[in-house]
Image (cartoon, rainbow, N blue to C red; front, side, top):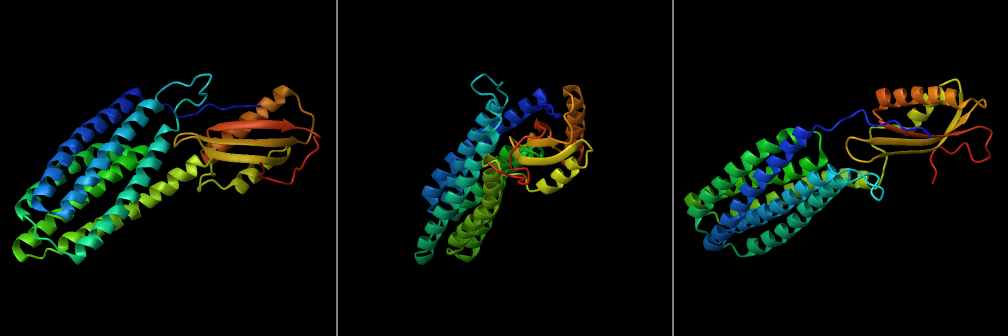
Length: 306
């Protein structure tokens, strides 16, 4: 058995910065949520209340993301041999699922309100939507860089980005209601916000689900890997292959490899080094686990099996 440790290293200061940015975003969203709940109840605006509900889930999702960030830094132990490396993927899955659930609730509320439009106190709606735009805009800027290469941070970022867009929609609605008395626009904007939430939430839900289910990453062609490894002169056959992501930094490969000759253990180590380098540089796989075989009975023609 051979194993190659990850070529990637976590940067302690970067993780601290990531955590600090999340904490700032949590406090900003608590302020918005409280203000919008009070404002929504006073003004009678469903769009404002729906934005407040979304902001409240942002607080929860950001707290989940922060806990996951902290857990992901904890060391492995005898009982937790991978540590908490999957905490961030789990957080992304939970956050994506909540985005979709909230969207369905908002659609239901918007349809009910469409049938009975309410008069709305627009001044409060306009000022509170501006507060939402500023606070969420700041949070979006804080998390933008980390969202590009971390699923957990992307889930938090998407919550905040959709919230900023929702606040912009609420502002437009408030202005239309103030100057043109078009009160049904409140329900229409709620519906648009909800459909956008489903659109962005589904992709993230699918990606995080794939990792949690140990599916092979879509950008890694298993058959091509097998062909490349079998090109090495010592190797007769590659079978019983598993490729999966532990998290976004670690992609694992394990396989049984049938050798042409009964090679020495030291020669196997050399071949293993070749396989590890090949898989890392060509397919970005950074953890390799190989079971060597010679003349062993069993199905050798099945690439993937339990």
